[in-house]
Image 1 (spheres, one colour):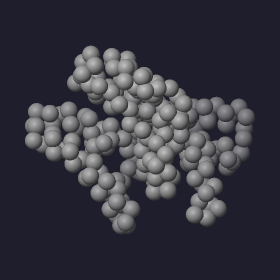
Image 2: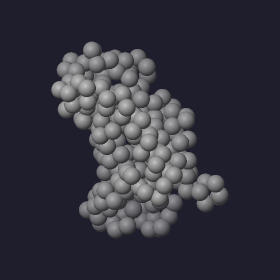
Image 3: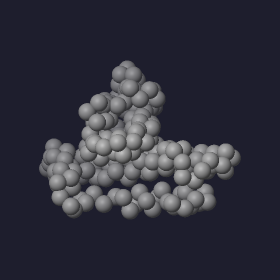
Image 4: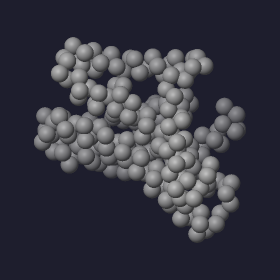
Length: 212
């Protein structure tokens, strides 16, 4: 990794840490609100990044472009309405990233118009990276592949088909890992989510008067 890559990685860090922290905090907070205290007992209902960052997953995210945080655990039997509450817990993570991306966009617009810092500056880069990273976390985690959050929406539908449900639950993670590995070793992007990230990021910023 040359100096340019190191500098670029450092610019990504604030957005990644912020996004992963809010994502996992939201899972933990909603799980607690739905009646399960597991996340609270494990100290996960907090905005302290150290409680949510998985060291290996974080390194993989920086080096390979994909990674993971510590999963928030919950006991489905403690939930007031297990079927719907599980979906609420799952969707809360991606939704938090979308909200954070929009909030950062608004803050960036206010600061840019108030302080009037240069259009091409470190501050601008940090905000833009953080905004697009959170849109990325929003879209990526909605993919209906275990262990991503979107898989809970898919699996809830397939509960009526036990054989298919069990197969997806058991082998979904391996399928997802296979897709990632193939994308890395080949020139084929098997998870073409960047156009949607760009559409959401550019679209919301354009509403605030920016064009990137």
